[in-house]
Image (tube, rainbow, N blue to C red; front, side, top):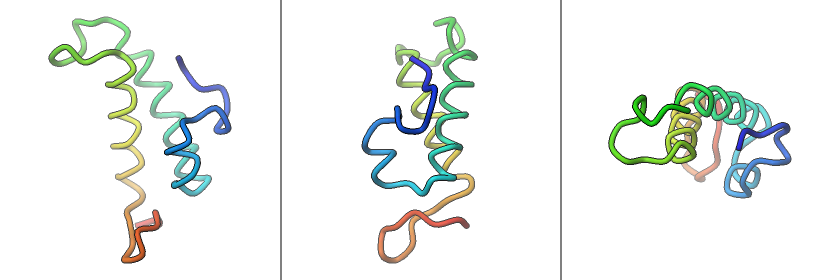
Length: 75
């Protein structure tokens, strides 16, 4: 289930990440959704959605990290 806009993202993403990080998440999720459509492309028995969420969080963590206050900030 790809996301059309950032307002469609899960609340855990919308409520915690800055707008730019949400955009990264959305684009990475949608890309991974397409890339891992074939179960043969996924490791283990993870669902397509699980893999897409993992990829999306990884993409965000490449650019953002949590500060001492627990807020997501650009590295």
